[in-house]
Length: 427
Image 1 (cartoon, rainbow, N blue to C red):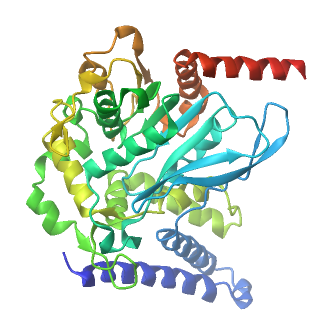
Image 2 (cartoon, rainbow, N blue to C red):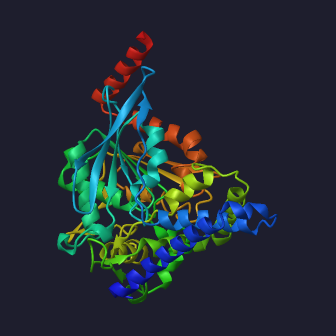
Image 3 (cartoon, rainbow, N blue to C red):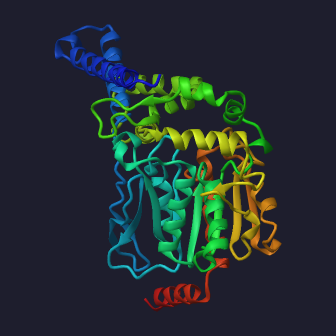
């Protein structure tokens, strides 16, 4: 699999399916076919429309589409996406709200690097932006990064987070969603030992595999049973000729997408069939529920081979973070070094990717942290997506996270919050 031709073959198949969809849509949409009562033409045109859109989305980076936010003054404020730190494999970006005083809650959202872009957290950003200063890690597609930029593995990821936390300062509240939760925990412990003054005020870990062995799922079973040699031989590919990262070894996003969809194949098949029927009946909209979800879900990015392999080996197989033996640059990082950062874990009872028990395991590793600074929450009816972007997040989890942040603010930030409340009441 380690040949550029296999990567280009996969891209060729994607383009072919996109072309077949667009062709079917165009051919079967001719007005003359409206003279027949046979629904075959409408269904074929609808299939083509859904197919073309689906395969086209797989190579497009979604836009944030966050243009404004309502402030405490009741007015709409324009939002600028500002790059605070620009690095080869990922940036730190800030959603800067024009004409609004700085919010006392300063939040760093650590987005997953697991095959999707950071825009997967768009709804999370939208829900927090009215009440917080939001920063987020915007990871780059490995296929677009030249080989000359070097490697990027799990230790490099950790050091990126350390740099971002240092830049934002100690009055930061970190929220790590899914895959980066264990790495965010390690980065915080790294700062606790190397630069205590740069530690964040709080750390919220949402649905992350701190200890994958605590509650097995299909994901953890795969990581345990497959060998590293099998992964290198069968899932890694070399970026093809049409991209800036030509020749770089990657774990392709399309391959990750196929794995995720296979886990719930019947659900996805039903969703696409229902959408085809709706399109044929002219009942589908450009931004209906199906398109909003799958426009994001199907937009995938490649991961560097070294990041993928080191994550599987060190987090899932050897469980280095769960056993508190993780090293960065040859130096062991002790989770117990965290003594001042409040830590909260959030899990979904129906999470089939990071099952309950995997994330809350972080609290047992925090041997140097006072129990009063530890918290956990299990959302009864939430799956993996729901704990950070769905109804469960909006109605239950988000308020709890904001309460946790408020309870662990510095005195200066708390004064800023009270000042904002007084200003609002004065108006």
